[in-house]
Length: 292
Image 1 (cartoon, rainbow, N blue to C red):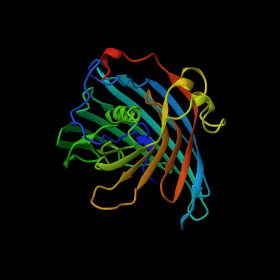
Image 2: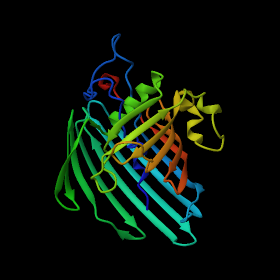
Image 3: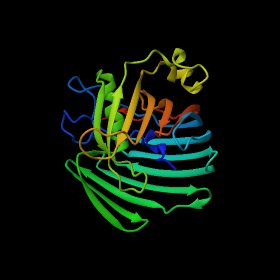
Image 4: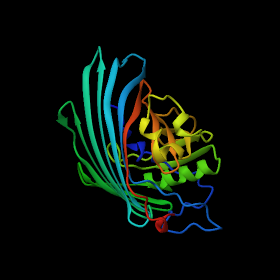
């Protein structure tokens, strides 16, 4: 079963182009000498999954499932995200396969500490739990695993966690930047992988009420979200290394100014899956005095 889309908002793991110092974005107020604060919306989003395309020797005939993302927090308290993704893939050769993934993360307010726990069930059989912590401080990056067995490893930094990357993505989009690259850690898979990422950011889109297919992402086409600025983003993940490499996973989505994501497409190479937002619950805005 392919890598989870928990990076969707977690996803949205990836980082900045480090033209500026990689110091964490801690609590601070926007002012005349600082860019407007990025306030990530506290929300719960539900996306229904369907097959977009398939090819290759092991073609997928159909796909269905659901992603639920529950995001809470601010730059004073830190950010908690709970993600569940259930995916059912059908193929003539391999039959039906069901993956049920549950991921919980906490990212500290200054984006220096990260906790993660992932529970996966494949075709009814539980896989080993992945549970651990990570610390990022400039060039130093370290992961400590509790499960499936105690272990630790280090990687060359800077490495960004998901919520910090999301804020930097929004800032880059606001500034009209077209690319953003970084090393990223979100605790997915076995908790031992740091990915190289590249985000390609398109031009600011028209209002959500009139953009894209009218049959998709209906919660984004009404109410306050219909007027929120957003940009098309393609986010690719690579195995760390040098030279030209093919991405192992690509996520395309509309990035909204408040961190909500729409128009999802999860491309695993041999096949791609669409995510249609069917429900969105928004909480009250976070305290702006905590905004980075």
